Length: 261
Image (cartoon, rainbow, N blue to C red; front, side):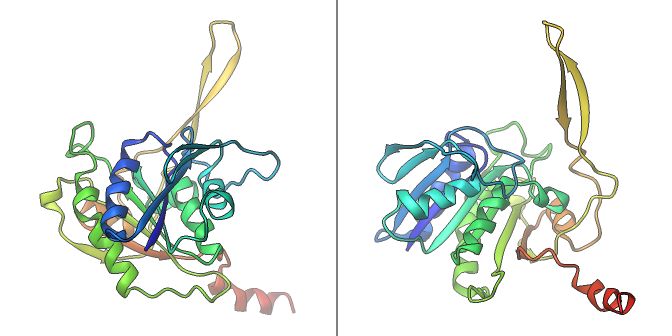
């Protein structure tokens, strides 16, 4: 198997090293692991692509590249330039922090998997939830490191993949914020929503007197509806969510059609 890995935390992020090990395990001795990741952190860029400017693509070693672009750019650069032929699988992550609930709408980690899916390539996004039991220690990515290869292998071998549809599936995986030994298994769940959690701004002034604004995230451990990616992750489970790029509110189409007659 030929696997492409990327992320939004940057080419030197510790989570990418974890993903390299996961990919090598899944690819096997006869497989290949290719890395095309952003040269610098690209968190929060979503599915952004840099179509209005060129990006530098730097070869750092065998099958290893850094791109001055977004995660989605990295997928495009890999399949269009860096790799001879297309990958069988794209893995994005392992993100430092969760991409559950509303975070999925902003995530560059998700954006890379989404772009791969639109290109007709199987893709999985992987993120590591942070919390008091794993944040700031050498065990930050322990749950992802222990269970990542198993989750990827099970999805590749047994999960549905409808690459022939207009908006094919990709998968979003979040590892819980607990030590690896306390992981309670996997659950297939929908995307949740943390009520009242929004991005906000904080003003700042430079020494030269110029005004700036920092973007601030909201609390990540707030409650969400039961049996969603947020709630099961906080309960110690690995959340697995099938996703598509289709943003249509299908449940509202029929009623809207009646109103527009």
